[in-house]
Length: 313
Image (tube, rainbow, N blue to C red; front, side, top):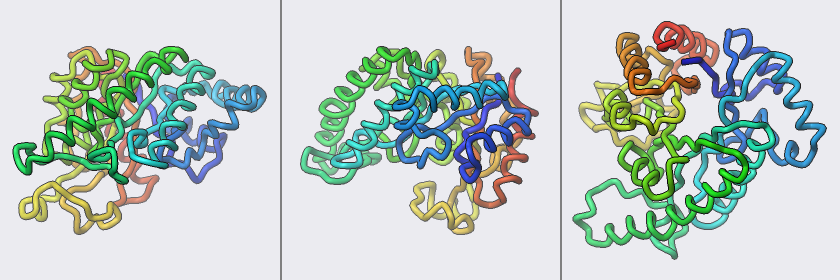
């Protein structure tokens, strides 16, 4: 396995400055956003698609530093009703086109989440049992069979046409795919070009075991995020893990995203990567640093040290 960096955390730096910073950490792989929710600080997708000269200059900056794009990320909600879904759909299609021009074979995405019916104006995440109230089975059927599966069948065709070989879907809460079982449902419906971007922090925050998830997903893990979460026991034991407070209110939340090693210890991370390797994954692990309990630099250095100490190389 090799370490890469999700570069949005260095969004205050220019593209060349960011690459120099990545290189200073001893990292030679980057995952950069090219669509979706991100402001895409280092990839102007429309500009690069429109200008062969700017595309060539962009590639040259990477080549000069011997840095590889391990994936383009366009995580958003392309299935949302209305303008948001249209915007994220368009950016997802363009990200795939840019990947084709750059020779990048992997896209990282989220599945998207539709509304609860054709008239809804906002997405609707069903996480309760559908046994009651009795309107929920129809919502789930609509979301999967009328919206998600048709969208993804069309999108995967577009991806194949542009040379993308893997679409790694992050199991993010408030998305239709938010755990291994929902990922496998989509994969069965649209084909094995779809796999998991396994981000352990999300499974931890939902009370699942990422190591067990690795075993369940054998052969279907396309990408891994190096990201940790900590259950804040003094609060979670009282209120549980369903949490909607802003991520900035770290002291009052029942769980938080933290630097790698500040949630699960290094022994856990060694087992996680060992089981990943044992079940066939030997690709990049992209550090995604979103710890708001410390500075960006401290979070990056802490996480890099922990990952370098635990990756199965």
